[in-house]
Length: 65
Image (cartoon, rainbow, N blue to C red; front, side, top):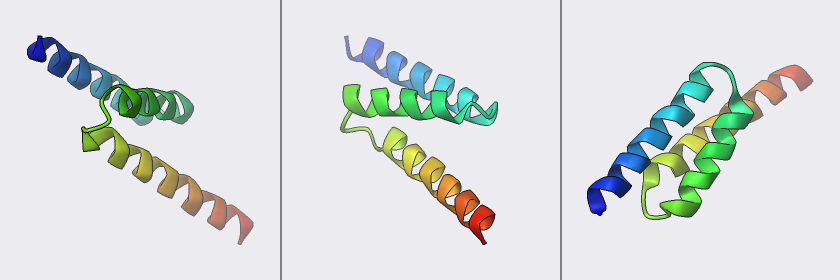
């Protein structure tokens, strides 16, 4: 049972990373948020969300300046 959960987590993280790499940030965010809901003890998706939000904030600050 644990192996199935681990496989699901790895697969979903990979898919979210593919969205992010393809520039589909909203899809990546939605998937990372779902992962944090389903796997709250795994830090990977939490850190990826932080990275995406930091990139967006920096981009917005550059556009405003």
